[in-house]
Structure formats: structure tokens, C-alpha cells
Length: 286
Image 1 (cartoon, one colour):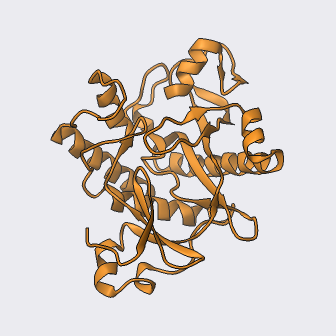
Image 2 (spheres, rainbow, N blue to C red):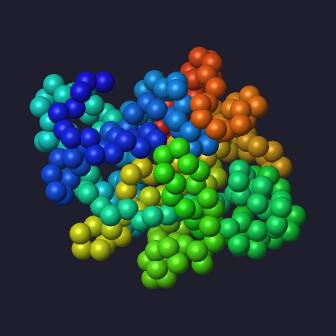
């Protein structure tokens, strides 16, 4: 990717941020992939472009629920044409926001770390769930299960709603929870009409200069969500995913201890992951 003539202000697990001015920044989605909070050595070709297209679709689809980070500018408004052409499909001009320091996770089905917690205690993040649920069971209602935001290379940790209130304040916690669940319900209903179950997802929120809660970063992508095909869904099983869960499953089976460095991912697993991401984009936006 061509060098961007802007000052880099942050390099995350999969996204890089560049300063435009005091109110705007350029967010570029790379082809890096993070699994179990470790950045893999092997990029996923084209992933950044696919994820940006999916995110942009959802930001527009959900704009009636709350403000988002879009400024209305394009990369051509802030970069020379030659540079803009290089990254136009993987970059967005967005507002500079103050991030809310939690991961806002909503779960509609039981799987992953939530399933492990449920099997151990009957709860997720301190929330009591009905007895007798299985892997991939649909929950009676979507639940908000926040986690603490970890530094790059560290692991996020599930926290209770009470801990969430202590971290960000009761009023803001209530607003974040309400918006996250509303976003999930709306997106899940839409995705279901396209043949996709959104099992769970993670939202990122920030506050603008006026203190208005704003949806930011990415939304409902295969990197931040688990997507299942309706046709393959069976309660009691781990349905195949459209998302990076495919690569996570391979890593789990490899015997890796989930500490850096990650094992080298075979080329066929990388290609299958790209194909899954593309399929999700095609199904959602057609």
C-alpha cells in the first residue's frame, strides 16, 4: 500500500489512524487479522477493503438509530488523487471522538467465551441465564455483556454491568447498553432476511465534542461479529461461520497457546477466510 502523506497517530490490531486536522482523521483498514488478541503474521489479502464496504453499508443502514463517525468527506477531499486511489476502498474520513473505554458486546446466541462462562456458572458477565441451554441456543433476549478494552497484545476481559457503570458512569452505561441492543436487534432482523444469523457482535462508541454518543470504528463486520448461515444452523452444534471464527477454529485446533507469536496460517485457510468474508458482503448488500 502506498505511503500516506499524513501523520500516523495510532496503529491498532487491524486499523491505522492518520491525523487530518483537529476534528477529522483518516481511518485505514489493513489486511492484518487479530485472533485471540494476537495480530497474525499472515495478512488476509483484500480483507481491509471487504470490511470497509461491510462497515460502510451498516453505518448507513443504522444511521436512523444514532449518529456515526462519518464526516461526509471522502478520501479525495483530504489526499492527492494518486494516494486517494490507492486506499479509497479501505479508508474513511471520520470524526475525532473520545472513545468509550469498554467493548460493547451484544449476544443473541450462546457460543464462544459466553458458552464457557455459562457452562461454568450458568451466567455470562454476571447475568443469570435459563438452565438447559446448549451451544448455539438462541437466548430469550439479546444481552449486553461488556468487556474491558485491552492494549494491543493484551486480552480483553469480560466485566459485569456494575463494573461497566463504575468505569464509564451509570448514565452513559445505560445509554450505551440501550443503543447497543437496539443496533443489534435492527441488524439481526435485517441479516436474517438475507440468510445470515448474527450470533453476537461488538460495537465501539465514542463521544463527540458536544458529548453526543456516536457509533465509531467498525460495525457488524466479520472481524467484530459471528455470522452463521441459516441453512447450516443447528442448536447444539458450532455452526460454520462467515467470519474470522473460521481462522479462530483452525488456531484452536492447532494447539496454539494463544500467546504471540501465532502459528503460520496455511494458504488454503487464508483463501477460505477471504471467500467467507466476500460471501458475507455479497449476501448482506445484494
